[in-house]
Length: 227
Length: 387
Image (cartoon, rainbow over all chains, first blue to last red; front, side):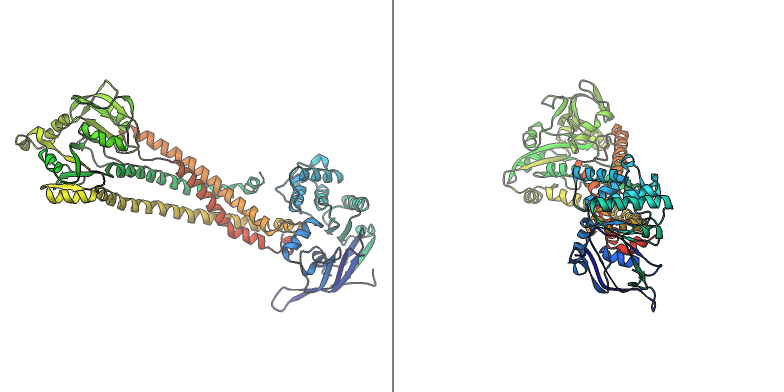
């Protein structure tokens, strides 16, 4: 059974008085557990909006989203907060760490939101940072880390609560191609070793080529023909 | 300390806000210390006057002193409800003394027999020497605040109104009237009192007959206010005052004083609070993207609110502690500078210190409410796109 299902999602935003953007116009998809999927498409095709809906950050005007068989589009905001904390992991493009917190504190923050405290919190965070190859730099602030290192911290943060689904929005957007390949390599390893489902929004074809499957989007719908 | 690190991400801005609160709390502590001192004086006065009636010459004012005849003591003792009445001479320690802040320095002589009534209420201790006893002509007991001023030591002499007295005792600090009082025996006081009268008058009066006031102790169960009225009706040429009169006079003064303190508190609340709101709003808007990330990875609205409220309360708390320390240092400096003249103006009490600090923390948190609520309400998607 698919772990992530989107059914006919529609969403429009109002920018000006008579200026509507139809970001999603009936997008549907289904992703199996353990898949490593890229969502690709030109800017404005609605891929980020779709990812936000899968991540319970935004709600559609129409349509339904199911995560692990549960319809999340009808849950209350507090329940969505809980799902984001415990069942989902997020990785964003650049600058997505809290600048005032060290690497390990950034990772521990996510554990804290999931209700993990005390020694378990720091142990888990250290283990995860070790796993992404950053055990040497856990006490550094984000400003003291390179772009690739920052993104590794973000990966560790996304995975610290061992969520079933990890969502990444342009995770390599600010990185050079070598570092980019490294980051995707780490994510792929974690996908294989831990069996987590990864959904990446990207417009980098190098990244797309390393995924199990590419979901292409155009004008707010999933382009079935290209899939 | 994550909260502190967040507060000092913008060092200058946070420091200025904290400084604003510091000034407000400083003003509050200094003014409050003055009020606490006065409250204590008045509490002492209320206790002192609480259960007795003071009788003066009919035309005497609050602090102006007119001679009264000793014969009136006998007349008052005859009034129904009077347990006992004692003559007293009560005058300014220094005839040139102006009305100063706090309690005026006084020279008092009472009847030693009145002590059995007074000691029921409070027992004054002695840091050195002993209390006055019969036959102590030419001897005196000095209040705690006057020790420096008069350079008083047990066994040494002090000069009061041109006459020397040997010090036999120094009283413990009571924080009220006795601190600024020199006590001597009645005959000595009568002697000094006669000398203070105009020369022409001095020859017409008999020294032993002159007093300034009479202290009247009511019988148990007798209301001092009612007794004062009865004395006024039955004894001529005197004015009796019950404790209600004292409370009425000081009560009015305290209302005005407390209003001023409250006003300063309100202004510091407004100024400090507004600047905390401003600082926190800027902080929320700078950290919009960060708030978006936190919400995306699972921070509840409550957590976001708690985070910003904590920062606002910390700003208030640091400002409060700084203001308290500055105020305390100021009060100590002024008190030690004026101690030499026997005037102690300020008193920082525990409840004032704790109250001022808690007030600052509550003020910070209260001012942080709106910014925190604003932060929690941010739409995570929009916040994430914010650059």
